[in-house]
Amino acid sequence: MKSKASAPGKVILFGEHFVVYGVKAILCSINKRVTVTAEKTTDKKIFINSEIDNLILEPNKLISEINSPLKPFYYLANKVIKNQNTGIQIKIDSEIPLGVGLGSSSACCVAGAAAIFKLFGDISKEEILELAIEAERTIFENTSGADCTVCVYGGIMEYDKKQGFKKIEDEPNFQLVIANSNIEHSTESMVSEVKAFTIKNKEEFSKLLEQELELVEDVLKLLKENNAIKLGEKINQNQKYLETIGISNNQLRKMIEIGQKTSFGAKITGSGGGGCIFAITDESNLEYTLKEFKDNNFECFSVEIDFKGLNTF
Ligand code: PMV
Image 1 (cartoon, rainbow, N blue to C red):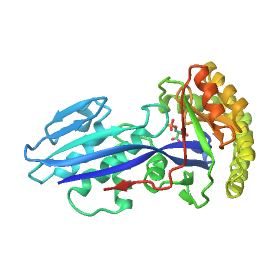
Image 2: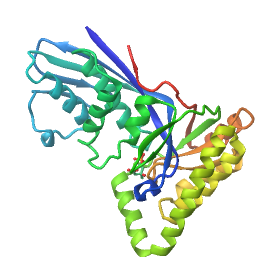
Image 3: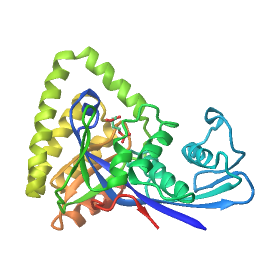
């Protein structure tokens, strides 16, 4: 018997970095997915197969001994086959570019937890989420869990450290153009750089926190109105704050300049230093925005908000 699950990637629309200091962030899942297929095997081993790596491992190894980005899958498989006389074969297919802030690792953990655990019986979305966050901690210990949460439930959500996540029920119909700098970035080191900024610039940073807080509240109202033009202005404003805290660079600025010229607004998404930016568009400027990025040799694609979240089949 095979078990299959797919989960979407994500974009942080507003509030990255400031969320670490208590401000709300707004995230949405996107219609680019990871699909995981799991199957029991008679050979009591864990087989993991993907485009980036292939592993064949004995069960019960220490997680710290595994040096592979596929570690979360091993963690999940090993957990489920404890006390079972079976092995597991896992196959991963992904449409989400890796390591550029589009949530590919969270989507892997969510689809992985669902596909692997469903082989052994029914499991709720809440349990899948808990397992996915545990698995993600094997590669990023301090994950807030926000990415896995939006992956499971889909749509748009607000997230803050104290109150956790709250689904936003509005379903705005804008399209996003994502442009990839193809510069890999480390969330952990970008978070530390921002920390250094906050220590050096205490007063300036506390003012920025207030401004970001106000901006996110305005955005929550604008989402209800489905107003891409006004949202674009807020996106540009948020980008200014991200510039101030030092997570941008020349390559990202070049991309943002194009996005801000062709669409309603553009900003970095995620931790910055590399990774992706997005621009907000509708049918009036989508093609033009894509064309300008392509003409300037930037890898880009359009996405819509995914309202489905985790899918098992
Ligand atoms: O890992 P990324 O690039 O999706 O960004 C993480 C968002 C941060 O706010 C920078 C860190 C965090 O844990 O919220």
